[in-house]
Image (cartoon, rainbow, N blue to C red; front, side):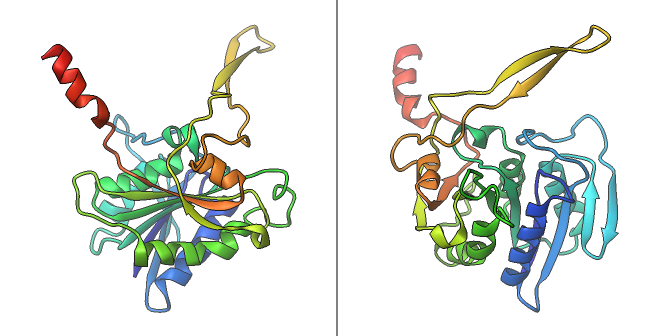
Length: 261
C-alpha cells in the first residue's frame, strides 16, 4: 500500500511522527509512506488552498517533503507532484494535537487535508488526539493514538464504508483524552456542537500603540449531545465520524422549494 501522510501542526510536530509510525505499520514491508507536511504550523486554516500565490516545496529526506502551504496544499502537492507517477491508496492526516470534534471540524486544517484527498478521489482519514487532564502530562500524551491507531485504521479499511460518490465519504477520528489502557473501545457518532462556547477574540495594544486581535477558543471538555463525537471522546471512546464535503442542507430542500419557487 502507498500512503501519503500530512498534518496541520507542521513537519516537526510530534503527532506527525506518531502518524508516520502508524502509516508504516499499515503500509507493510512492501509498501511506501510519503510525507508532505506544512513547513510551519497551519492550525485553523480549514480547507484553505494557496490559490493566489505559489507554494514552495523542499525535499528534506527520502519520501519526506515540507511545503510552505496549507494541509490541502500539501495533499495537492503529493498527488500532482511528489507522487504524480503513482497516486497513494490512502491519505492520513494528523495526528493533530487537540481534538477536531464538534464545530472544530469546520476550522481544522487536519480535516482540510483529508477533505482535499476525498475530493480528489482518494481514501482519507483524519486523526486527532483529544487532550485533557488525564493525558496532558503523560510521558507521551499521544499514547491512545499510538496504541490504538493501527487497529483503528485497519478496521476502517476493512469494514468502513467507502464509495465513489461525487462527494466521497472520508473519516474523522478523535482519540479520547485518556491513557491508552483506559480507552473503552470505538463508537461511531455524529458531529456534535458545543452550545456552551464558541471562538472569540481578545484585543491587545502593542507598545507602539497598534491594536492586535488574538483569536481565542473556549472550553473543549464538556459533552455535547449524547452519542456525538465530543461526548464519545469525553466518555473514553475513540470517536469515528463519517464526513462528506457536500454542505447542502438536504433536509431543507423540499420545504424551501415549496416556499419560494
